[in-house]
Amino acid sequence: MIIHPIKAFADNYIWCIQEETEAVVVDPGTANDVLDFLEEKQLRLAAILLTHKHEDHTGGVLEVMARHPECQIYGPKETETLANHVVEEGDTFNLLGHPIQVFETAGHTHGHISFLMGNSLFCGDALFSAGCGRVFTGDYEAQYETLQKFKRLDEDIHIYPGHEYTETNLRFAYDTQPDNEKIFNALKKVRDLREKGEPTLPTTIGREKEINLFLRAETLEDFIELRNARDDF
Ligand SMILES: [Fe+2]
Image (cartoon, rainbow, N blue to C red; front, side, top):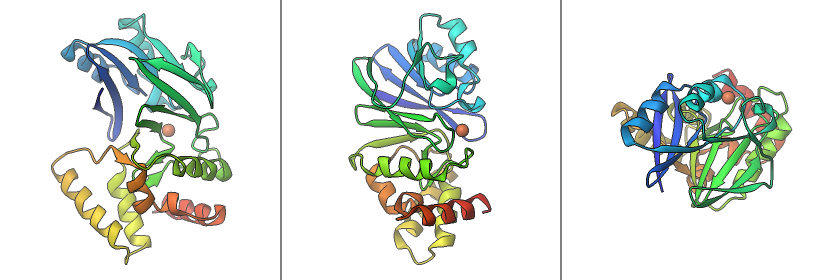
């Protein structure tokens, strides 16, 4: 299994999971970049996974479907106008010969879900490297619970979020904890990667437990304070 990033808009990643000549794409916010990639690699699109309803994660679905009409679309109820398989917490299904588990990871939107495929977690805007999604729902408790859920996963799980926000997140973390050496070193490394135009992702659960202040927040109150400070950063 190879996982490719397809860059879209200013800072989105549409992840393309390839198994031999078949592919699955996650959150195609735009169609052209996806169609070009599939064409270039001569891949048959088996399925699309949707983590949540936002346009920058779903905007390309219809156009991709038009070119790959046999492809199946899995998403939460909030994407039911697009998804022909509405899935929820606890559901499992198989794609490209791999089992996929569905987790409810609400907070950013009410219906946000994440997909665990083997050792790879596709978490949309629920978790970023050194950050987490803005709580547009106002349900901070749900987002806090989502973070606790991620913390319970194996540390070697690779995380594929929907955006390249790592550098800004680490600047915020460094601003909040200027004496934290792990955050300082992570920021240095991430700046090097970004200067070369390289993705800072995937990350892992183990790494995020060290550098992600949102994952490290020990109470709901601490999390809310941190999230509000990040919103104003
Ligand atoms: Fe979003």
